[in-house]
Length: 219
Image (cartoon, rainbow, N blue to C red; front, side):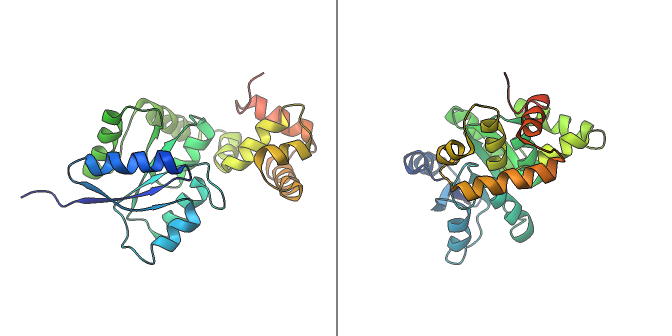
């Protein structure tokens, strides 16, 4: 008996890339694209129209509701759907966060179509896709989770907070950081105040030292 079609949802704000991915998915035997969304909020709205997908191809950097926030929502509200992350970043902190929120696989957007297909097949058939990127990060997370408070703290950071930390290590003013991240200065103030409290540091210098010490920014 032939396998039933695996329904895929694509959540990515880059429309051209998403359209290309949709065409690629639809070209694979046994897979079809159920729907597409620009971000997590739109994904949740689409679920009122469409049935739950089997696999969600999830980007991380998206407006309104990013991939980490979407994965966290799915873990609580849509646990049966499996997440395959497609991202341009191989940041350990981001990968750890996505694994923490239930991602079953993580590949970079420059991966070859054959690798993409392998990841889909593996998640469909075994529930997980383990590659060198993910297995190393997962091993680090498992072995350090109980040993390093900082590793735990990093896993709690959103991608926007990580970006803010990285930009804080530059000579940019907070106003320039706001412009770079395309958010309001008030939002940047919120990131700063929240991180000062979360990381238990007193100033921007403390944020910079944390980012450099734990590999979020390299000199």
